Length: 193
Image (cartoon, rainbow, N blue to C red; front, side):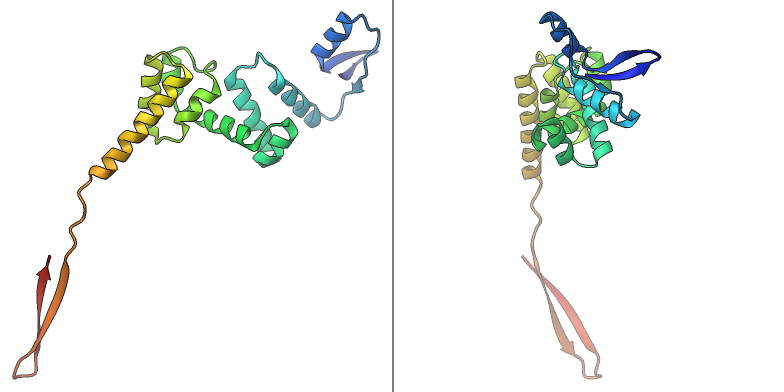
């Protein structure tokens, strides 16, 4: 538990749930530290909040982004949180998608509550496709499978459009040189194919 001085008493800065657990176990004492620097305290509170089960996905994304900004790399944050680098990367990707899809998610009332994993599937799509896929997924119930299916459909559509483009016509250009009696060289182009 982390405490800060408040006159002649101490206030709990981090570890409220631990204190409640100790009270539940009828323990009279709990190991505690007196408040460290404000920066360290803010980081500790942020890390503790990330571990909470009732933290909204949007708040989780904000907290992870703040830690990445503070520590400079996803690897460092993954180590601090004891999560994989892939988990941190997915949370950041979902954060970008949530920000880009803000109005669409607000229209459906799920801006802060939609799980990050749902957004991860459409995060790699281009912006226009992302909006269409999100609308389609939300109108299909908004579940993880709906988002995955909408993302796959958008990727298939994009790849089929790319394959329907007319192939370039290849041709060969040859030049025939002819020397005139007055010494002038005339080039005649000939296109084949």
